[in-house]
Amino acid sequence: MSTSATLGALCAEAGLSCPEGAAETLIQGGTCDSRRVRPGWLFIAVPGMHCDARNFIPDARRAGAAAVVTADGPAPEAGIPVVNTSDVRRAAAYLFDAWYGHPGRRLRLVGITGTNGKTSTACMLTHILRAAGEPVGMIGTLGYTLPRGVSDGPDGPILPADKRAAMTTPDPEELYAILDRMASGEGKTPIVVMEVSSHALALGKVAPLRFDVGVFTNLSPEHLDFHGTMENYCAAKAQLFRQADVGVINGDDACGSRLPTDVRGPARWLICRSGVTARRADTPCPDGCCDRYDAGQIRSLGLAGVEYRLVSPAARLRIRCPVPGDFTVSNSLEAAAAALALGVSPVTVKEALACFPGVPGRMERIPVRADFSVFIDYAHTPDALEKLLLTFHRAMEAEQGRERGRIILLFGCGGDRDREKRKVMARIASAMADVTVITSDNSRSEDPDAIIAEILKGIDKESEYTVIPDRAEAIRWAMHHARSGDVVLLCGKGHETYEIDRTGRHPFDERRIVREVVESRTD
Image (cartoon, rainbow, N blue to C red):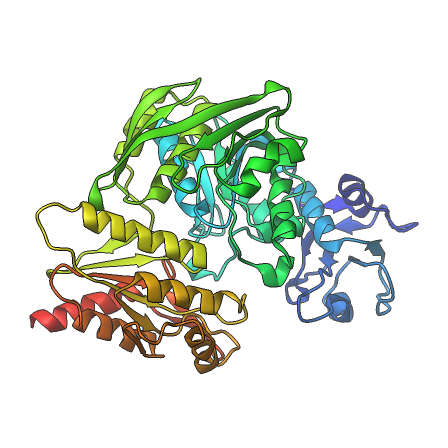
């Protein structure tokens, strides 16, 4: 990490044109938030979704900014050197990467992208790498974990994402600082497993990075309010593989199966096929640089997990993983392929997956002293919800010696997000859950009642459902109406311990509410 650098040096590293006569201007820090500017700092006026960051240039100058980076075109008179660029977001990534001494070059990087399964696959791969004795850190939806041997540093520990309202992939100002910290240990080069969102790829957040391995899980409708079309969404995901040496892809997915022919980048492709979704025709592979990783002889162990046979050029293994569901086959197969590509032994891969502890908020069972079960899951897209419900149907049918109970599903839809999915999720819930409880889920600036009204447009009015806008009340209702053998699924929030509405962000822990209900039932 630099303590100071000249504007000319930073511009050269980032591929920007430095203003004439400003090359020797000393920069002592940088930020994209005018409120954090300190004397001698560089203010990067990244365009916001709802406001023009150039309006804050005078504030930055009054705070002592030494220079400004801003978009081409008219801007307020700064009175200090101004660096213009056509893409401020991408420039910010290169500037912070340079400021922190290109930390990605001191790490082995694994990037995981896809609509669903990023967090589960990242956690599985991290678990395998730790079992192999590798120093490994993780960045993603759940927050950040540091590699072994890296201290917390003067700023204290890295907090979980839900304590900071962070994004899946942090903005460059934060991302490159974290990568620099992860690269600060001594000894073996750390591996960093990071979830890479389509937003991060489209906005250039990770543009300076080169990934040892890129992983693609799947693509289903999501974030179309940002990308516009599925084609644009797929193209954004594909960018990761232009920056990767090895590509691990879900060959059963329509977008994934196109990557080897559409993308020039990886020298080698590992094509994972499980057939848990509709199996596609063989993925075309240019120049014979593809290896097949197939999952066969798949068997559900009910709520105890899955097992299957992994067949590849690198290994033939009987894999068992204690997380139920077809998606566990897909996720663990890709995690195994990535681990093998990174040099982990087949025996370690097998043993690590057999004792995988699960992912917080992903099919997380909440212990209850009751004759029914409660699970929390992050499913907040139509595809994820459908797969989750199908998983529980199959797992409950595979349970031996007990009558199948009901699935009581509780869900809502987030505000200020893709509205089209609301009625689609309602149709899925009506068709696949025995009882549906419609409630709130991070309504943000929208009226929660208006969101629920849109959900109800897709509900089957002949199905069993109820509407309870207050999420805590809805959870209590679902648990009080659960009978012996039932499964209560609380969907949408997963690992989150907060609720966001028009008034801000408030503590909200579903686990605590579940415990309180159980205790009240047993008093």
